[in-house]
Length: 74
Length: 74
DNA sequence: CCATAATATACCTTTTAGGGTATAAACTCT
DNA sequence: AGAGTTTATACCCTAAAAGGTATATTATGG
Picture 1 (cartoon, each protein chain N blue to C red):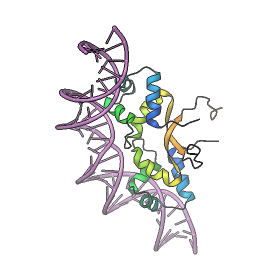
Picture 2 (picture 1 turned 90 degrees about the vertical axis):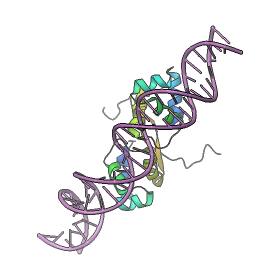
Picture 3 (picture 1 turned 45 degrees about the vertical axis):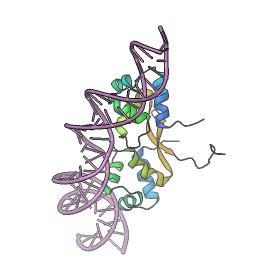
Picture 4 (picture 1 turned 90 degrees about the horizontal axis):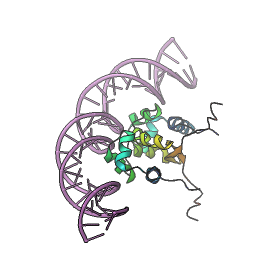
């Protein structure tokens, strides 16, 4: 079971919901530009803004342990 | 098994490591004030800064599904 | 208790994220 | 292939995050 990166998660969920970036921006209350930066993996995003979007998809930002088992790469 | 909030995780790990806020600030390369805001649950933090600290403790910010089972509250 | 260290609060400055808009490029789909 | 739609890039502006420092408050231990 693979953990999706933030950008992957948002992009996938948005597509599933059949929303455009514009529509997601409106629904979540953030700017359109923010959605784009998010889906392009900008690292300096504000947590609260990211969470505004994640809650729409039943998720949020949290602490995840870094994988030391290297299951992916084996 | 309980998932720790960001502030709880950082505080716990910092104590475990026997570091002061000052020392953690230096080690991670962020300002002292940032550590304080982090440990006080300021919601508008920048993800990259938060991650600078989390990597020291073998973790990072990631997407976590919101709990719909309400196990805690039952 | 007092001294010292650690943490919290407050003020000011610099830097930059986020928003808006306008243009360009990349997809659809008929 | 071309019209319309969606996404990407580039500009400027404003609001606020982050840093520094200085002071207050709280813990700690001697």
